[in-house]
Structure formats: structure tokens, C-alpha cells
Image (cartoon, rainbow, N blue to C red; front, side, top):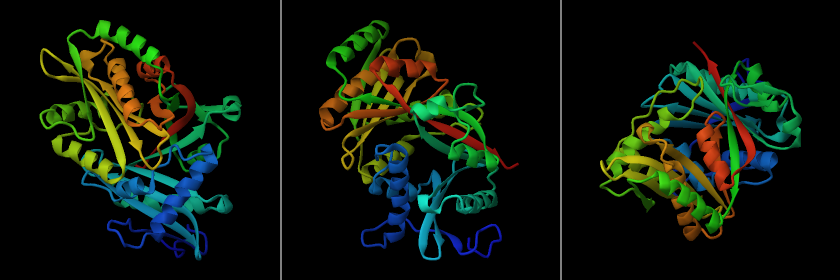
Amino acid sequence: MSSSNPSIPGGLSVERIPVPVQPGEDESEFNAFHGLDIAHQLELWGNRDRCPTLAEAAVFWRGSEYEERQAFLAYLDSDVVGRGTLTLPLRENTTTAGVDVIVAAPFRRRGFGSAILGVVEELARGRGRISLDGYCEEPLGPATERARLLEAKSGTGGVPLDSASTLFALHHGYSLEQVETNSTLPFPVGEEILRELEAEAVQRAAGYSVIAWQDRCPDHLVDVFARLKSLMSTEVPIAGLGWEGEDWDAARVRQEESAWREGGVDPVVAVARHDATGELAAYTVLTHRAALPAVIYQEDTLVAPGHRGHRLGMLVKVANLRRARDLWPDATSVMTWNANENRHMLAINNALGFKPSGFEGEWQKRLG
């Protein structure tokens, strides 16, 4: 991972960096790594709404028993010029890897991004990974609306054909598998709107009740909740990405909750329970960071296949938005991402008042 590699420009080195675990550890490299993400988000969006906090990023990049995560900095002599990341699933999808590259604005178009990508790709290949995934965001605006689009293989949506991220991905052999819409909801949502949507949902949801919690799933529900979360990886549209389903159990739920807590992330969850069987039929999750109080993230929302057609997605979303209004009064928006082919969930979001604000291309490269 140094300039002795002929594919790396002279003077450039790409080095894996440690992620701080204990207070008092040297955080300078990780701060530089995180700073590149902040600068990228500010350049792209003009705000930090989509950027994790430093504490959240540190917890994430330490990895877990379910995914190994590696962070890299690229140096030109003593200057930090870019960063790379590599994620390696350890329980499922063990032939896949996630890759990402950011190059600081003053150092672009000099081959540094290609060099960083080459390093993380080679490491992934050395770990037996034959499918690489990457994501590129774009704001929605006049320029992208007028742009010629590269259509996703899913058949719904596309990304600007001449954007820097598209050209970079295509140049390195990646194909556009799917596009997700990034939508934003002004917050709080008016009670009149919530009451109207809830009344419509309740008419279709006879025999179901809503249960909610904050921070930690109740012990008596964690096993059935874990089974519902396992469906999230198989029941949402994944186009041609070919991911295996994730096997969730109580321990995995608790690990996610612990990581959120350590990273300063506050979750609220609403589920719909089928009263006759006790089965959890739907769930939705919102998360909030006190360090960035204006933004709430809409995380997973899922209705189990056997319980669809009862407006349960709307029912749990309304309940969670009400709870969020009480918990996080400083929030001014809710942000979410949905695959373009997920028409049902997009319709729910549209009814609540979400508006498209950007999109994300999901790219894949097959090595074998």
C-alpha cells in the first residue's frame, strides 16, 4: 500500500488507519478521515444532514462480529489527499465487499482515486470477495433533472451520465444495478394530516395493535422482532445485487442497539402486532442524533408478506412520527431512502409529505 506499487502515483501512499476505541488514544488520523467525509458532504449538499457524527463514525468503523470494516487514508508526502473504505460481511454475503473512495477537491484528476480504489479492491480480492458494491449520491436539482441519464439495470431510475461519480464507476468496470430516491419530510408533520392517514389505516388494520419502544426492544419481544428484521434483507427490492438474507437473532438486535447507544444515536421503534397470533407483522425505525438535532433518519420500514394489504406500514409510521415529535422537538426534517421500484413504500412516504431531494446510485463489479 505504498508508492512502490507501480499502479500508485509517485509520492502517494495508501495506509490503513486505526479507529480509536478508548479515550486518550491518538485520534488525529481518524479525525482527518472523518473530516474528508464532512468536506465531501458540504460540497455535495451544502450541509451535514447525511453525514454521521464523529462518535457514530468511530463506532461504525470499529466493525463488529457481523462485519469487518477497514478505513484508509491516502497521503501525498505529508498531505492527506483522500480516503478509502472496505467493508467485509462476516456471517452472510461472504463473497461480497463494500468499497468507497473520496478524494479531496484540490487533489482530483491526478489518478489518486483510482489508486485508492485499486488498493481496497485488491484487499477484497485477497479475502475471496468476488462481488464489490459501491454507492454514489447526487442532489436533485436543475442540473441533474436536465442531464442525460444512465438507466439502472433494475429498469427504474438512472444517474447523470456525465457526473464525475458515474464516469469514475464506469471507468473502473462497475455497473449501475439500482437507484434509490432520497426524500425529505418537513417536520413536525401536522396532527391533522397524521390523524387523517391514521384513520384510513385503522379501517384496514382490524386485529392489529401498535407497540412502541425507545432505545431497547423489550425482552419478551426481542426474538420475534429479530425474525421480522431478518425479512428486511430479503423482502425489499435489491435488483441484481444478489445479496443473501441476513440471519437476525436477539444477540444481533442487542449489538445494533449497543452500537447506536455508544455512537450517540437514539432510536424509536413502532411495530404492528397481529393480536390473534402475537406475531409481529410490521415495524419502522426512526433515529436521531443529539449532536445534529435538526435531522431525523427514517431507517427500516417493513411489512411481513403475510400481513400486507392492511395499511400497516402507514399505521406504524404515523405512530413513530408522533413519538418523534414529542422526543425531538428541535428536529426540522426527516430523511429517508427507498429503491425506485419500491412503489408501495414511496406512495406511503408521498402521502406523509416526503419530497425527493436526491438519489443514490448502487453500483456493482463482479471479479469472478
